[in-house]
Length: 405
Ligand SMILES: Cc1ncc(COP(=O)(O)O)c(C=O)c1O
Image (tube, rainbow, N blue to C red; front, side):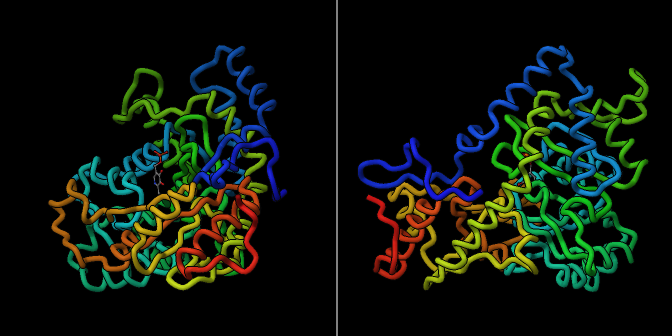
């Protein structure tokens, strides 16, 4: 249920309202009691590695996203690492992905000794553009045989355009690893059928970093797949590659999900759809009220329910950083996701990319700004964000701003 005001909180200072980018205290107050019970159960069980809490969450996530197998792991980064390892990605291989993502997407490819090859984003959605992907194959037929995986990212909570992407991958027999770290619960219209982010490709990866829509109280992640053999390899890799105990056909690591985190996540999972709806309502409110010169609001592909708005990212045509400072001074939290695209990161200089290689990603890095979108944001808080943006961008207060001081 959308809240119109929160009494007893300290968002309103004498001078101005405070609107943080994320405030997990509001969520905590809704579920504190079931969380306490779930945590106590783990504590009292003395089962602190693996066990029924992890298995229960794995089954619940598999059911929720429509995947046959789910394997809890230690983080979204490790979900990517074990998925790519399970697919045999290693030195000499190429992995196609987007340069506009959180570092882990590309870092894990590089850590395995493979070469990340970038394809630019669709500027409307910030996601890997399947048409440019096709062009890459058309122009690089000599290298196509070395492509060991394609890694689309469902950035900010919206699915990449998976039908053309998977058509292309399947025609070439290339596995697709979905980086769904930010998009658990996002759905995609698959020729009339609704499919979940992470459950469309060969293998999918989720992050439970606390700021994600389904966030742990620490680190956590999950791998999903319909492929039983791949699932078995991931299960094995997350525990040093041991199967059975002390027998190692594979070299894995300690990539296990903690049962305390699993128990917490299981409680939160029951609220996830409601939290998505609240994020979507908040996004719709911004869309309606932020028709302002100099900014563009996000462009959800297809129906609104596709997008679960882990982030609500606007594009600011000029002086993004000036606008950001103005909002900070006004007590409004924002973030830049991501200020430097991967192809311009110093650690990837050896890949040989330069400025201008991926203009859409570079533009996004320079112009995008995330606004507060979390489920418990009140209308009053959103009105304040709208008011401050309107004042900065038009020099006027909006027609019907909330009283904020
Ligand atoms: C797109 C993307 N990929 C991977 C990750 C890595 O997840 P984690 O922080 O759980 O390791 C994140 C998390 O921030 C992410 O946003």
